[in-house]
Length: 251
Image (cartoon, rainbow, N blue to C red; front, side, top):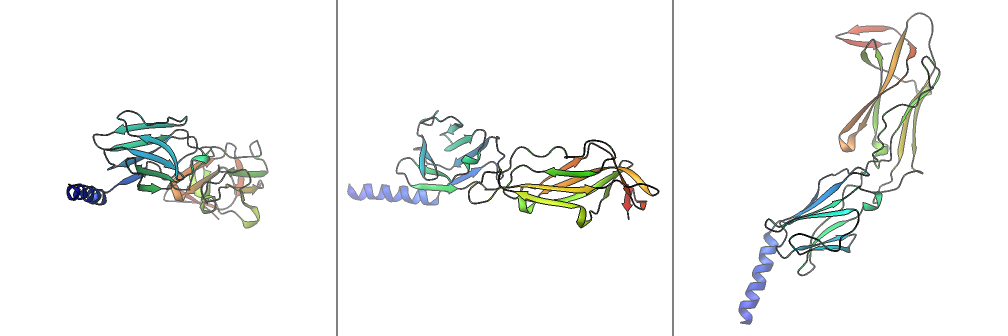
């Protein structure tokens, strides 16, 4: 009888070893205040336990519910297919934790993961900070929300001339590019910060000038995201404008 029991245990261990347990989260770059769902698949039919930073969170051993229930979390269970879902509602910086899916029958760790520490504040910039009226001198700038990839942010400046975009080369003396980490909360080990990019603009006059809008293209490379932001006011710049293949070039 002991030999049969030992064979059963060994068979269970063998099956557990060949089953590809998987834990994934639906967003590698979660947005603050958005919902993020983590899914434990190929889990045992006996149920699973969720752990956050190695501390017990909830147990899913029933067909319809995980306990205890916490505000800010919701669960979905499909015991037929052995799929367990945990949704973090309104993602916060405090949710930047290691998530672990464990076998509820013996507590063994089946899979752990830490969601990407590149977390984006939902306050993506939608407008520029400007002097406040057409044809004014002053600073034209954009400030991002808190992002852990703030130092990797790329950007390009354009002017819109007669409805067409033209690459705008900013003099070093007029360029603004600063970072601020004091108003941001860190996620995992990465430091979050805001990035401000801008131009110190001085109005041009005389011949060879054009009335333009400024536009900046922000490249959030870590999230494969680009944002176009255009000025609300018009400005005057000077240069030699040449049109070629539908594009303006300024010299």
